[in-house]
Amino acid sequence: MNDPKRYWFPVKRYGWGWGPPSTWQGWLVLVALLFVLAWAGLVFLPGDPVRFVVVTIGSSLAFFIICLLKGEPPSWHWGNSK
Figure (tube, rainbow, N blue to C red):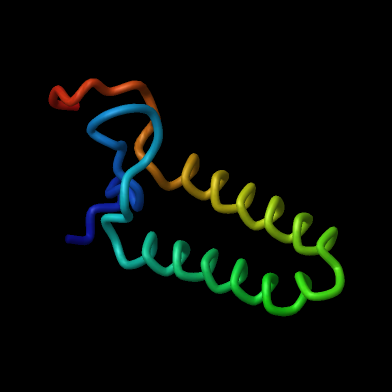
């Protein structure tokens, strides 16, 4: 269980990219992203949609970089074993 090579985000079985998180750290990062997006929607959307877009792009980019660093190397999968 204390395997340092354990990926937070495994690759999807079909397509390119990552599936749901496989560790608590991955779930924490995903919940944090959803919290930031919900907060930005509540705070910025009523009066400042530009800031909402900036926060959305920034937090999504940060999440993507974390997936690159802590997830399995992404590649195209057709449902066969990894």
